[in-house]
Image (spheres, rainbow, N blue to C red):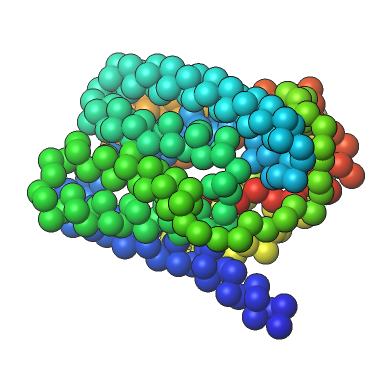
Length: 319
């Protein structure tokens, strides 16, 4: 029965979102062509990099206080909102800077996509501060919303740049679905009644950052195998392999600094030497992985012991 439950969870949480995402991109390619779709993909990856760099893990802390006194719940929600609002402002500033950098290297089409993609970023950060939207089916809601918007854009004959609205609006669709869809919340394994502090958010962020970096690196390696590699990476995430590997990753700050610098340097070299869409996709991927590693560096001071990392349950907000 446990194996059947795992297969069912993988289908709903990983494979169905993967199929919907593939269908969304098929519609986009049909609507605007391969070259512009590749540039749009690069823009989406660049935008995601700013989110990974500024990611703060607040949902778990909120869920752990779901049964706390009302005053504690209110304080936790207020702190989580302030943290996510600050992260959003920083991410938008980084995205603005990235837009100007892309213009300097004559990637004006990719730069033109970014403002439309950024329209969905407030929904992403707002969702992380709202415990009522915590759901393992976020990826499915996001992918389905993207497929719906891509189909509407294709049917309406949207201009090439406007197709970036698919990725801005789908965030709001996913947020609305999760916010108002009736369901029974799953009680957390750990309950806390104390006020939420920034140190707890920072510690959780450091753990999640290291844990998801494992998944992102494996996904980058498996990408060479196409859809099968993507499915394999998602299967590993669904089985929590990255959670099991994370405690044994090197815990040396210098390695993370070198890794981030190397990936960003490689991205800059690709962007400057080749203007081909495929090269920009690779460059955006390097920026994203480097940003994920840099996020761990931001919270490195609060990184707890290996034993503490093992006790933290997974979040459900990664697509």
